Length: 305
Image 1 (cartoon, rainbow, N blue to C red):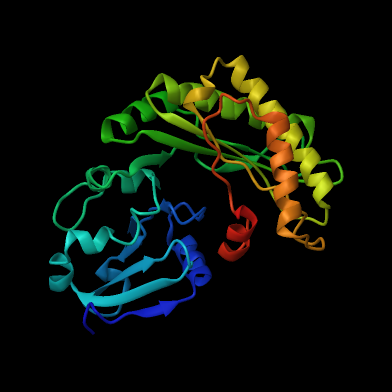
Image 2: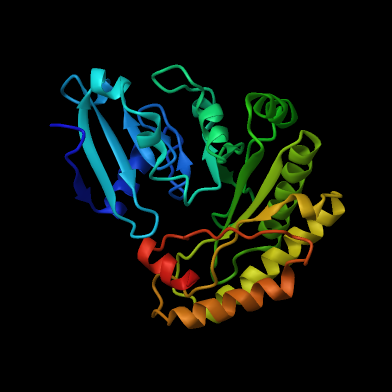
């Protein structure tokens, strides 16, 4: 099959497949890349030959506007000769930053160019996922805290030297009858603040990501109240740790009803979300990048519109 032959596939299926392939066992958004079996760059995903039953590799790309993805098989000889502009033309118009897994930060293209350098040449800022996932928070009803503080300062310094300029750390909170508990809120807020300060001390812009999960039957008012409480705690902790807010980004959930609750109109989600942010996020924060929070790409796009 020539490299000019394309087949459109459903983007949601691609996202799930990538989630399985990532060594970290998660997928976050279409700018989250990495993993031992699948490597991604600027919206084009490369599978190494060992994971397919032929001597070919798979090249995938997606359209950030429509959400459609395309894929093509090509042999390694053709792939090695794949022009640079073709590798990048499906992503750089829409991406300003890419989050790497640690192992992917040091990987290179087949012609030997580091991924980080390739991104910089195309005005895309490299970032790095620095947390080590969540663990159970003792004394709570299944709530979690995020781990990864061991040698975090040294790791951030190493990531900066490798070309990363921002970092991501995800805290997870759930809504229940008595959740999130005050312990969970404070533990995760303090963790995010400590991480943010360590990042700034080592030249990285921290993305502060307190995610309130959509799991449950709660209504949108409950989600709004919890989101406001969590964000207020986070910014109190960031202030206590003397984090420069102008050098941070916020990555929150949208305010929406639980996944087992009746849906509401996008305008309602937008209204509650904006209200929550206006009530809690200081004006010094320069940018907010939303989590899709388990929504389909279509739902998330409509809610953002």
